[in-house]
Image (cartoon, rainbow, N blue to C red):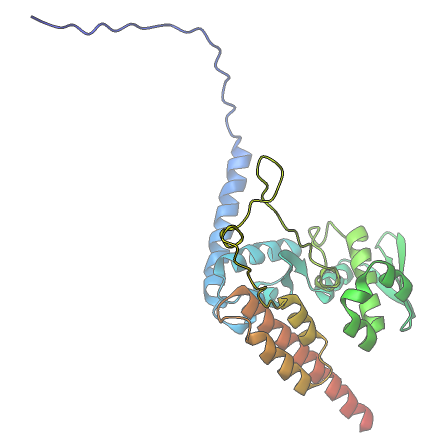
Length: 286
């Protein structure tokens, strides 16, 4: 006795959309990008081991991406660590870097007003187009910038206002030259957005935790805001205060983490600033 398996074929009428072939130009562009990424990765692999990497130390992948972005803006790979910075998760340009790009491309930046209460900067394009931005303490206060950066606005208000002016000017006049990237100093003055989520059950009430269900009261855990610690480092007025703030921040970070690298870079930046101020004071005395 034999058993036959009957098969039935059903012809289904349907239209198949033709696949549009990728143009040679697109393929060539992808090949060039892949080649550029390979070169950037080779450089990043070595540089990420050095202090020249800045915030990208120990992060060759992130540094390779930064090198590629920097290449678009005309920034040498060796300068990436001092040109691009990540603030609140946002890749940003140092203010001096953005201003340098503007000047290199024929733009002119003039400081019209420079006082502790107000700063005005005018930028002129190579074609003669002008834009003037004025930032005052009143405006910064209304926008919540002074409250979030009180120490810096008390110790160096004109500098804080100046970089707000530069940030707005570069954002509006040369976005094509800086790849639409914001300024580090501008982003730092803005508070990071913090959000909380709460899971609700079908009745719209919060679902109790195990401790709550058992009637156990949970004591609040002590928390430290790394942003506040970084702020203390950036606003330290003396070397001693810088050391104290840095040591306090290190107590809440682990070597190799993003927070640890941020603390290290903030320390180096502020130390360089304090050293420069000390040299200027020595020169004035002489």
